[in-house]
Image (cartoon, rainbow, N blue to C red; front, side):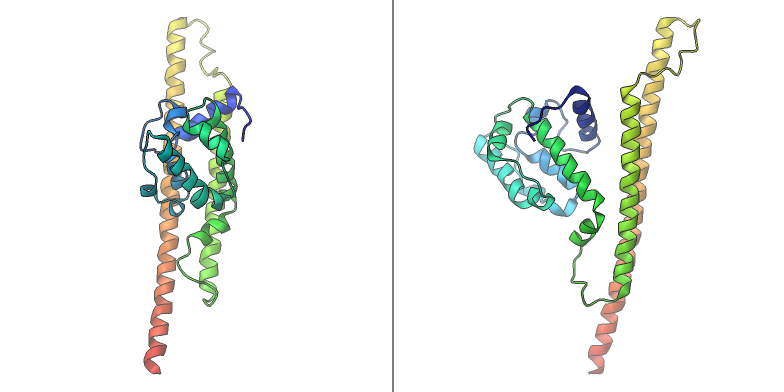
Length: 239
C-alpha cells in the first residue's frame, strides 16, 4: 500500500476514478479524498449495500476526518479484506502527497477481486435465508453470477483496450502527407475526442444493460418468493 505509483499507473488510476460519479468534482485528489467521504462513495458505486453515505460527514477538521476513515475501516473495508493502517490514515488526513493514490490503487485491486468473486456479491444481497428454499432460488443466483461475471469480464476488456489506446500515439491520419501540420493536428485531436466519446457511450450502454438484466433477475426472484409465500399461506389455511 505504501508503494509509489509510476506515471502510467497514476494516469490509469485517475481515469478509473473519473468514471465513477462522485458528489464533488475531482480537483486535487490529495485534498478531495482526505475526509474519506469520496472513498466511501467509490465503494458505494460498486457495492451499494455496503455503504450508508449519511454516516460519512464531509469535514475539514482532523477529528472528523479520522472518524470517517476509522468507520470505513471497521464497517466497509473489512468486508473487502482491506485495511488502511492508522499511520497511513493520519497521512491521508494531513494531505500528505502521494499517499491516497497508493491507497486507492490497493482498494481498486480489492474491488476488482470482489467483483470477480460474484457469488459473494450475490450472497451479500440476499434478504432471506435460502437454506430451506427450493431449487429455483439457486438457479436464479447462478444466472446472476454468470451475468455479473460476464459483465465484469467485458469491463476489464474495455479498460485494457483503453489503456492500450492511451499508451500509444494515434497515427490514423498520418497518411495525409501533404496536409498542413496544423490541420493534421486538429484532425487528430478531433478523432481522439470522438473515440473517447464512443468509449463513454459503450460504457454507459453496458451499465444500462447490466441494470436491465439485474432488474429482470430481481423480478424473477420476487415472483419466486411470491409463489412460496402463497404456498405457505395456503398450507397455513389448511391447518
